[in-house]
Length: 235
Image (cartoon, rainbow, N blue to C red; front, side, top):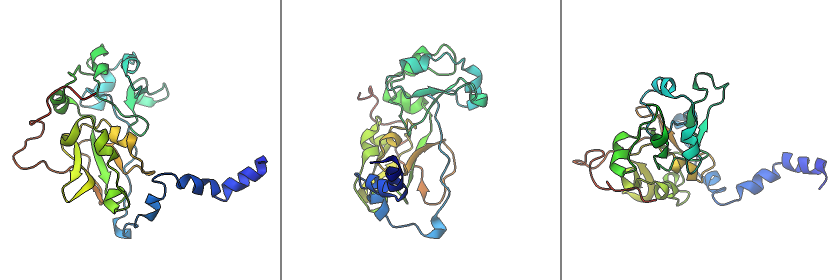
């Protein structure tokens, strides 16, 4: 096809329509629109620090020397580094869960030569107690099962921590619900098939907006991070 004809074809939207016909592509088009009063501004995309990072970002930046060892040992290569023009974040590691989530192998903390990353055992209980990358948040106005436009469950099936971090709503087995033991690894974000990524990781304590949920309370009498699953992660 001549270049001019090809560009005209794209401009007419034929290419976009073809892409939208891929799996899950049409489901979001069929989803009912939210009432105007409930449409809210989405949180900005947030990058994450590697697991075991110091509690405050300023303390982490001060402690990190930008050696790059954490990125070198990362099996999925999810740890990236801000470049020199990254302002106060220059030469510090970060993770973009939309591109690749953390598998919680905890190798980065083992090799970090500074207090920037704590060495945390690769055991569920230790990860529940010490890893605070963030917490997943689901947009119930967009998620396929929550708007009744499809069955998914990709986020639940991909979670390395199991049902203590994310599970299904008891009223509807296919609707995902985030639990307080979520540590914010971002694997759920990486595998989400929805074009607008209705699941994302936010900072713990960050206020939610109308139509979005952060966590579902644990059953009464079950303290966060206390029961079950204290063994080595299943991968």
